[in-house]
Length: 141
Image 1: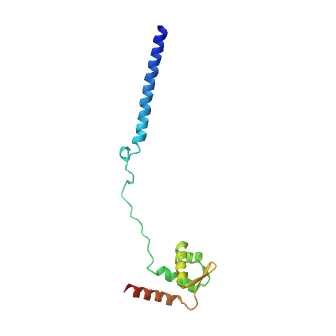
Image 2: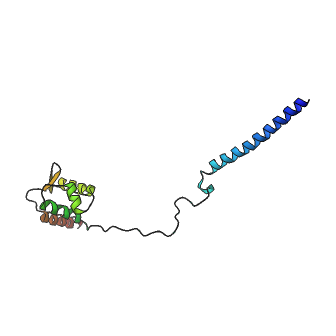
């Protein structure tokens, strides 16, 4: 009987250790499952900021059609200029210059030869700008 009592107490001790381990694992599982819900998480809600908000700096925009005039004037002054040089001289991003020159090529105001741009023959930059303003005025009426 002594061996049976000893085996019984070993089994009971193992069961109590397993119960403690089970409670620990259930707690860990609950914190994992419960932690995915924002209301159960400790700390600040998502998107919350500390302190006052800083005012954003606003960039000064060029006037409507201003960049177009600058591009046309540069191409008129320096035929054969590349888009990268245009962007550098205007102090703007090359993507903006390429977008604008693409529109000007489609409108047949300038033409592209390889990587360079030049004015279409017989189309001075100042006349083109005035024509565009006149066209805009007639379409808005």
